Amino acid sequence: MDSSSTRRQVTRQKLYEAAVTLIAEQGFSSTTVDEIAERAGVAKGTVYYNFKSKTELFEELLRHGVGLLTASLQAAADETAEREGTKVEALDAMIRAGLGFIDRYPAFTQLYVAELWRTNRAWQSTLLVVRQEAVAVVETVLREGVENGELSKEIDIPLTAAALVGMVLVAALDWQAFQRERTIDDVHSALSLLLHGRVSGRR
Amino acid sequence: MDSSSTRRQVTRQKLYEAAVTLIAEQGFSSTTVDEIAERAGVAKGTVYYNFKSKTELFEELLRHGVGLLTASLQAAADETAEREGTKVEALDAMIRAGLGFIDRYPAFTQLYVAELWRTNRAWQSTLLVVRQEAVAVVETVLREGVENGELSKEIDIPLTAAALVGMVLVAALDWQAFQRERTIDDVHSALSLLLHGRVSGRR
DNA sequence: CTTTTTAAACTGACCAGTCAGTGCAAAAGC
DNA sequence: GCTTTTGCACTGACTGGTCAGTTTAAAAAG
Image (tube, rainbow over all chains, first blue to last red; front, top):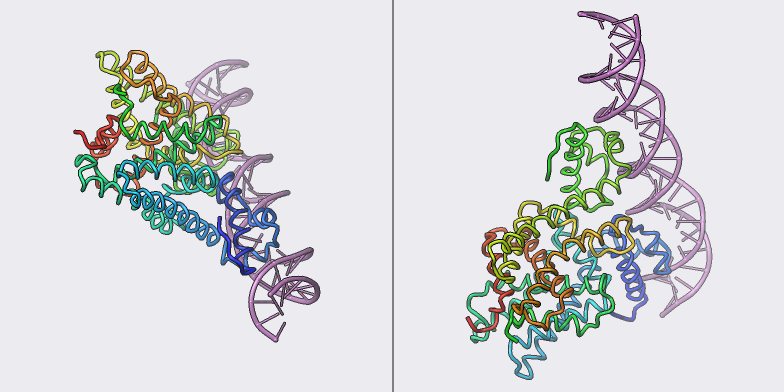
């Protein structure tokens, strides 16, 4: 998901990649450190040389991944703004960016959704922070849209942002898990239709 | 979530209730059978007297819970049909029913979402079946809406159904986890607005 | 010569699943 | 009536395996 050049960075990256797929498939607790090390092709001791604990490895993985998502949403919003597109176009571009992210890192998304709403877990506070960063990008676009009159004043910004993010996340995971034959464009247009409110009747 | 009268039914019910909250908080693997037994107020042996294994207890819990959700969605659709409401009204009623369910059984919802998209897990096939039952209820309403011209022919029924279910699930979990101060009506109207396509401009 | 990685053995806590046995109510036997 | 038997529901100590994390001495890497 990234690359740097020191030896240590390379090892950490290999560990992230190994951990993300294993944990997405099996969950955190049933993934063993031995498995992660083996899949990454390093010795177990190396895991503990690079991370304080299994939990810390996982927390850094979360930060790393959500950072990438946030950056890609932000980039989509910025590009739209640059070429002076509307806010609805920006939302549309963000939906596409979100889908692209999930397509590239399905395992990470899976694991994120599985952990997000759990309470009482060691990494809850980490998650809360990174989630807010991602949702905030959407909230900002919604807010700007309401301000310039493009979006309805009726909308509840935090709730709508959460619903939109959720819609994309869930539709994409469903696509990956149960409807593999559809293309990313199928999914994008289904969601876009919902966003533009063209589900009911009018065409 | 249900009640019957034989001693055994009562015990199983207690085990379901204990398991659902513990697993929602901690995940399946890090919840121990000892914990479940203790919270239910029975001995560990009783768990194994009533269920073949920890996994089987969990699978029956999933079936049980999704059964309740499906029934409640179906009831909402039926009621709307009885008083000859539109399909959009039916979807609206189903959103409300879904929110009501999540409000009543937040732990179950949490656990369902966390497990749904994992692959390679023992209970995958069980989940696939119960998920399909729930989504099918929404698909039917969408299909009928398209047939009677009330909904756009453009919509992709399976994708839209999945997106709608996801939107409700995620918005509701977010509400429970991060925006407790909102009422169920706030959430309902935010989602309803999206459904009716009144997010962009026109009011 | 300092940092990072390796390989392998080890420890101790923890946990799923087992099993011999208990309590109890309703039938069977007398 | 009363006592013996049967079978269901439950109990909790115990076992065998698993796994996070440690330790160590030595080898790569830079």
